[in-house]
Length: 52
Image 1 (cartoon, rainbow, N blue to C red):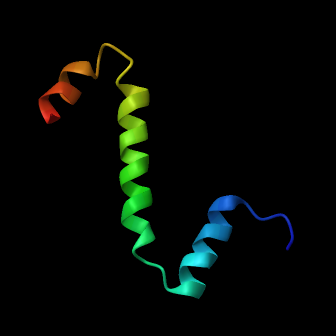
Image 2: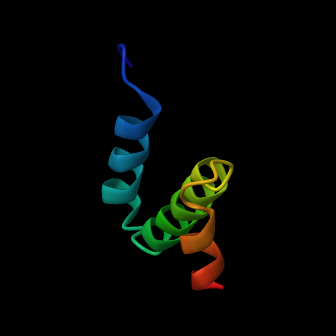
């Protein structure tokens, strides 16, 4: 198996199993997570409120 990161293993899983429908789900979860992390600062808060 070696010293692979989880991202590399997930990428190989997507290629091997042709599970490309996972990619938009992961991307959406990452965007939501980034909005939560950056939403805690007062600078980005008005921009996030404008999205919703």
